[in-house]
Image (cartoon, rainbow, N blue to C red; front, side, top):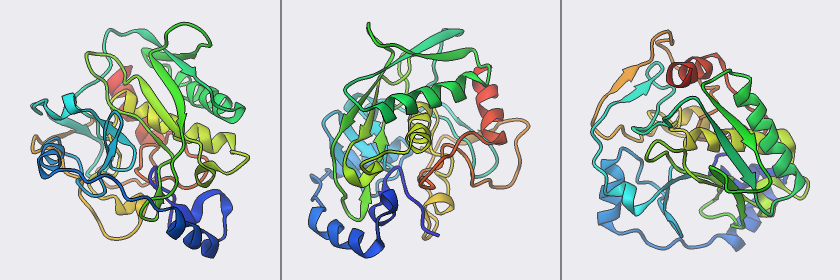
Length: 273
């Protein structure tokens, strides 16, 4: 079965009929701004896929939901990633530091489903007992702001949310959630929204897509290796040697509720406990 992505198939969003989705897709597809060969080369050097790269107001969106800034693209990759098995939990070169600490999150100008979804994601992380905990705030300056954007399908896909990676020992500061009707429908499911926010928080604290070595696990189609930047990988102790396609950091959504599996917990404990 085809699955929704954090760039997801529009025809599977919000229970819409497939024929209707295909028709609406054709009408609403937008032509993304072209990305230069130099930028694509920088993205590849960082170890990310150069397929379907999109220009964003803050940088470039890669692998469906990961925001890379121009500054990050100029940074030389020099440290190995960590992995669980051959196709499992990978992290970026940057992690959140100065632990223990509380990461504050504020939801700005989004509906109740997004607020409740944020609380769901926070509760799931906090139950792990990591040296990094999360707290939603309603005033003051947060570490992470969750805000909306409205973008329809493009190329048969729609982005559910996006975020980026840590820098300077701090989590990435912005999660964008798509308010377009094709993303979550007119009455968003809180567990679905919470699962996407949980995934985007994973990027904010340094996690890559679990299946970057083979996105066919969650996205269907043929295997695509997104690359590791040529710096190798180190398997996290205590994790299996075979693939596991149920991680919260899979590139493509299952269209509903998804949280940490046992291997995700091992990876997060190794990095943050």
